[in-house]
Each structure stands twice: as structure tokens, then as C-alpha cells.
Length: 417
Ligand code: EPU
Image (cartoon, rainbow, N blue to C red; front, side, top):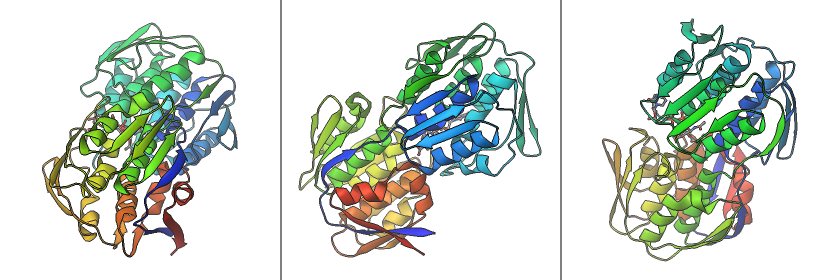
């Protein structure tokens, strides 16, 4: 076990390279199961969720090789093996095994996904999609058993624009007979990334990134090479950290269009932002205006940046309001920030945040983005060392966080406990 120690009060400066997107990677790796020859994924982040997925594919009989940010997956000899627990419990995105195994083998038996549990996260829309495609879904001693003699295209209207359900249905429908239309589909950039990979594998998917996605099923899919899009949440976390520390940071290897909701909100608060083709410069200021932030589905402000943003809002003047319309209670980080002297009150799905100086404390990350929020909070503390436990959550999604922050002038280090 390790903890993170943060001695704050230093503005971040320099250039940070953003890795490939975690939430793409954890969908693209299982998508490779659908191919019958080698899939090469480039620009993979070096995070524990990716390592766990590599182990899962190996356990299913896949041949997985990894070097730096590239993974070569040969799924030719894979089988649909029941994955009851163990590895699938380690990550939320193990639900993509359902769509991928169903598409390739017509059957998937997997335990309920684990991962960050900031609140109950249902998968009813995934199941509704599989059933519409002709699968039967049953719960067998805590494992999902999904079976279809033949998958047939269908029209599926999602009750909520779920990222996971949209991708899972795309995975299975790529190998269904006939046309599948997903209405009220999620529009996140990661969905376009998955569709780009599947199309390079021979799938026929149109409309990814809009609310209507059309998938014409094909007989078989083949290998290809694909480079993962930059991680917009990691980029956003560094943008917020730069502002919170009153730094001057260039965030490189980003798609500025993906950052628009955050960029606009930071500018509204008084942060200076300069946009380039593939990078963004964030110049912090001594004082910030309070803000009203609403986390919504894409292209709205990302719920995954809601917790890091809370730490920045503690540094703004006056009273800010942070409302999450995606998850109703993603506020487990609030008691930890209170321990650091923050003035925050949670009312329903909103956090009301009054600007205040933070102080060092011993705090615990309860999930990945809560961890990012605590690191940012620690970076603003002028005297004392903030101790953050629950580092394993942070390692699930932030590639080389400590090393990158150290390069930017922060005093952050790991300590074994
Ligand atoms: N929902 C349902 N039924 C479903 C699926 C979702 O009611 O069958 C609800 C959820 O409870 C939530 C909303 O729909 O209120 C959106 O959930 P979604 O399915 O879009 O979330 P997800 O696919 O499980 C992904 C990311 C999350 C991110 C959300 C929202 C991955 C692996 N995870 O989760 O990322 O918060 O989309 O953008 O892609 C993170 O990176 O820290 C993280 C949690």
C-alpha cells in the first residue's frame, strides 16, 4: 500500500503530455475480441485498468503483448470462458466483455463489474440493448449469463444516453444480422473512437458522435492498427490544477474541441486560456470569480471533472454552485475537502462551495476523480503536507501522475505504508 504526499504552494509550470484516453482504452481493448486477427492499439495510457484488461484477455486465451504505449492483441484463439469474479470485479468497464463476447461467440458469462463505486451504477440499458438484439439475459448466482443463438439488428431507444450501453450495443450489433439503430445514443468522443476502431476492423457504423447511430452487421471482423484519442479528463485535470496553483502550463496532445465546456468555464472565472492545434496553455491569475457549474452529458461539462473542479472553486471568491446532472451523489470527496478547511455544503445533487484557503490534512480518495480533487486541493495548500491514501484509485486512471507533477515543479511523492 502507498500514500501520496503533497507539499503545495508551488505554481505548476512547463509542458505536460496527455496520454491516451482511459475510457477509450477500456472499450477498445475488449473490442479487439471481435476481430479474428491481430489488433494493434497505440497511445495506450500506462494505468492499472489497462493492465487488468490485458490480464482478462490473456485469461480468455488471447495473445497480448505490450511495450510502452502499444498493445498487440491476437484474439484468434480466444474462447468465451466464464469470468465470474476476480479480475472483472477490479474494473467497471469489464461490462464491455458482455457486448464483445456476445458479438464474437454468441455467449458471455461474467460477474458483475466492479470499479469506482461513488454511487450505484445500473446496467439496465446495456441489458435492454442485448435483449433487443435477440439475446436472453439471466442472473446466475451473481454472474450475468447472456446468450443468443443468433443476434438480429433492432431499433433501440436508450432511456438515458449511457456511454457504456451505447458502446456495448455497438460491439454486439457489429456482428448481428441486419441493421441496428441506437436512438438517444451517447455522443462522447470515446464513442467515436470505438466506432473508428470497429470500422477499421470492417464494421459498418455510421453516426457515432450523434444521437442516432446506425450499425449494419457484418459476418466477420479483422485486425487493424488504431491510435487512441487523448484523454480529455486527464487534460482537464491538469488544466484545473494549473488554474488552482496559479501556474502557467501547456497541456500538450489534446483535442481542444473536447475541452470546450471546461475552457469556457475557466475563462468565465478569469483564467487565461490560449488554444493551439493540439495544445492548450492555461495561465492562472491571483483571483477568480465564483461560478455555477453544471455537469452534463457531452458536450456539457464532464461529470468526471466535477470533483477536480470543486477543489478549484474553493479558490474562487464568493459562493459557487456545482451540480451533477449525470450522477446524483458523486460527492464522497466533500468530507475529505472539509477536513482540509473547505466550506462546502451538499444539497441534493449540488455542492455549494464558499471560497476559502485550504490547509494540510490526512485524507482518503474514495474513487479515481475524488483522488484527483484531493491532489489538486493539496497542491493549493501553502504550508504543510497533505497525505492522501487510496492511491490505488488514482493509479487506475492517471498515467504517471507523480512523475508528471514533479516535472511541472510540484512537490509530490509516494510513500509506502
Ligand atoms: N445509467 C442507467 N442505466 C444504465 C447505464 C447508465 O441508468 O444502464 C445511468 C447512470 O447511472 C448515470 C448515467 O446513466 O446516471 C450515465 O452513465 P453512463 O452509462 O454514461 O456511464 P458509464 O458508461 O458507466 C462512463 C465512464 C465514466 C463517466 C460516465 C459518464 C467509462 C469506463 N466510464 O461510465 O467515467 O463518469 O461514462 O460520462 O467509460 C471515470 O472515468 O472516472 C468514470 C467514472
